[in-house]
Length: 412
Image 1 (cartoon, one colour):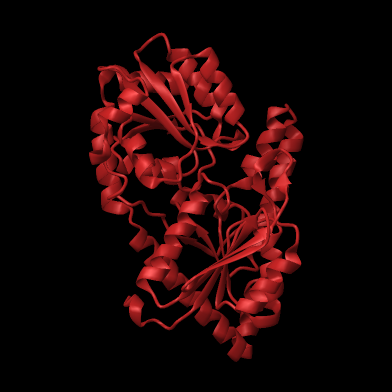
Image 2 (cartoon, one colour; image 1 turned 180 degrees about the vertical axis):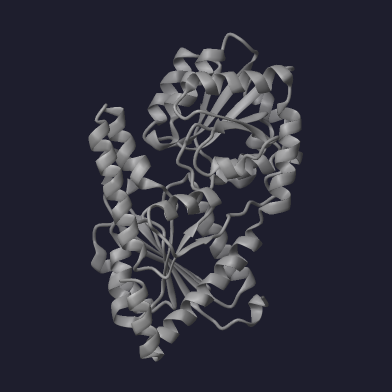
């Protein structure tokens, strides 16, 4: 596809989560905006929560912050409640396509606009929220029957809402299968990318290791990302505590979120644990990852695992859980996967990697997998092709009553 020759379009992303400093959603949107500005004649509009209303315009890129209150349980997250402001922005900008990045209230604003203007809508399934946010909290309270009912209710909502979208994007085969199991049939698989020049083993720094107190012969384990229940930070800490007396090394946790206090408190109990706030400087993050030896994660609900891909591009083996996108992200030879919510199994797999020094060869293989298969150019070339397909589909629907009738029969 010759991107420079395609018709000018205006694309609008709406999300509740862009303002969070950590996480793959922000990276995905930032990379998309960079790609649109550098590689296409298109405009991009971003609508996301902020402390106060603000519009930032930079050439063909616009960023609208909509004043939104912080969530009481997690001040780092803001939730847009004034939907009329969002609708007013969309009405003013009149995008050719809308992509929704959260599945709660904002999709209904986009659908209201679509009803008036026939604008196609694509939804990105960034989080398996029926499991992560509905089932898991109730399971933790030993409310198994209620937890299953809540998950099924969430799955019904996903199925209902997906029928109103032109396409639902999944970033991995495992997430696509999960969506299909819920009865979602308009799924498009678009793996995310990674900048293999920035995230590179060559960024390994002895200065970084010395600053972290890593002595010669010691290994450094690292986790980077949101610190919350979904990511199972407590499982990571428990696993490391199980092996702290068995091997020389340290565990660095980098991030922010509601479990931040838990991570900080854990460093007071176990001096081999290190906590560091998330850095928005990608070069600093790349140096941290490349200077570590093993990336550790316990979150079972990853839909792609962007931080995992960045770690792999940095030459790290991955020790995690056999669930979600990790099944696709970590092929045999690139790391070890174990049972969900089992600190014991996570600890055993860490010891296996460390005792055999197999993490070095695993990291080299992981780097090759990332460099050969994951690129942002491939991601956004695929996304743009999908956008064009959805725009053409809506144009046919508007122009051909028979097409519209057939479509309504096919998707009641």
